[in-house]
Amino acid sequence: MTFLLSALIVALTLAVTFWASRRNTSASDFYVAGGRISAGQNGVAIAGDYMSAASFLGITGLIALNGYDGFMYSVGFFIAYLTVLFIVAEPLRNLGKYTLADMLVYRLKDPRVRTYAAVSTIVVSAFYMIAQVVGAGSLISLLSGGALTPSVAIPLVGVLMIIYVVVGGMLATTWVQIIKAVLLMFATGLMTVLILNRFGWSFSSLLGAAERLNGASFLGAGVKYTNPIDLISLCLALVLGTAGLPHILVRFYTVPTAQDARKSVVWAMVLIGAFYVMTAFMGNAANVLVGREAIVTANAAGNMAAPLLAQELFGGAGTLGGEFGLAFVTAVAFATILAVVAGLTIAASTSFTHDIYKGVIRKGQATEREEFRVARLATVAVGVIAILLGLAAQTQNVAFLVALAFAIAASSNLPVILFTLFWRKFNATGAIWGIVGGILTCLALIAVSPNIRGIDPPEKTTGRHLVQAAPLFPLENPGIVSIPVGFALAAIGTLLGARRRREEEDQAFEEMQFRAYTGAGVDGTVAAHD
Amino acid sequence: MTVSRLPSAAAPTRNPAYARLVTERNRFTVLMTVTFLVLYLLLPILAGYNKPLMATKVFGNVTFGYVLAFAQFIMGWVMAAVYVFKARTFDRLAQEAVQ
Image (cartoon, rainbow over all chains, first blue to last red; front, side):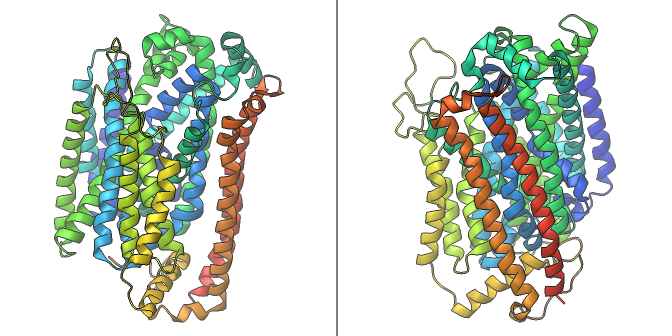
């Protein structure tokens, strides 16, 4: 049944992809669906792009096993959209065409910035993608009851994502994300109603049941996060990093105007907020109804909590309803994986083609037709590389790569975006220092952190640390150090950098500000400049 | 929104509507951003340094931690609504600025 439902979802998304292929005929169609997506559609698609299997399966499992601490992730993932709404969405739409680099180059007028911004986009996307692809492999293996091993599941997901993106471009990617968001909201909404029904429509009695089974600490903080600084560091990276994630940023170019970009964030916040609130119900209910032992037996990290909970809510193991519930939620998780990797693939291949190939290698000389062809080739390349990296890393514990992607986005992209928009003296040297410094600081701190270094007892055979030595940096999340360092390096680079003449600098800033705040010069579909 | 390109970038800064837009929008963005960051960071700070408070039951079995976390969601939606409301003024000023 799981197979049947998953096959139905894949058939539906492929049908949409071939429908979209008729409207995927130029580079602009490919990158941003011609900028013709409506605000409502884009809002749902942002939600679909963002709510990953790591959220749906991972956070439900975290709450089921650790109680309240798992729910703090949910809050951070949601609140992050205020940063996106207040600071990034509208100016980005007004200043750029397809990528983050467009916006920076528009203001800073230096082609070197394009290269570095593209590298940052590709690095962030790559880490996020490896985590998703490896996660997809083990999840599908888990969800299929071992029928599909990760070595089969990873290429399967990779091939599907290549088809969506190459054939249907951004339009198909958008609709895959919309379909997945609707399915996911439906599944979590229905489960929450069934949960509340079981507990007399009272969250308090659900928590009461969880407390009786797990003790009072389950309802308070501290079960998972024992180091407060590490927790604050994680929260900072979540709330500041989302506004620098390339696959989210690219979504704002798919709508016609800055007003639509604003409306899409609001739509996304309605769905994302509702979803993450429901994780509190699902996680606690999984703990109570399925039981810690059954969850850990299925998967030590708790990833099976949500599907097992669905089985229980729909009638229990062995019943028709229970098997249907399990199959449905498993199929939804599969759709979730596909939608997120498709979004990452298109963001990475857009940046590679538009910034590196057209902007740097061909110095802006490539025709629309050539760009369109190269973009689809790049997608195949990105997809194949993702599959290979996923296969290579399939036995590693890669969950920290998601936190790393958020930390890099917060430490290298966000400072540069903020300074570009608000600091008159900011220049290209500052942007390059900020981007390179942010990335290197994050990578260096992660390399010496407890994610990589640690001393395992000899009897531990799986999930061992890569380097068997004491960590040199105490935190798992580098954000609290790397974000200020990113800002500081961008500022130092600016002060050291070669200055253009004062009037030129002022003029570039005012031009940027005028356009960012009024949308002047942005024609209905695609920005006029390059 | 279809607006033609401007002949020069220096001229519009003298438009009073534009000057108002820049001042008000910058002030509003800073105020809103600082407010939500401070309120949001209360959550990890209290979770890290005041565990007894987070575990205190407020309504039935619902602890202060859950109340604070749910309040963050309400804060997010309210601040988004306030922003959208305020943005209407900015849209109007932007229209005037390009005329």
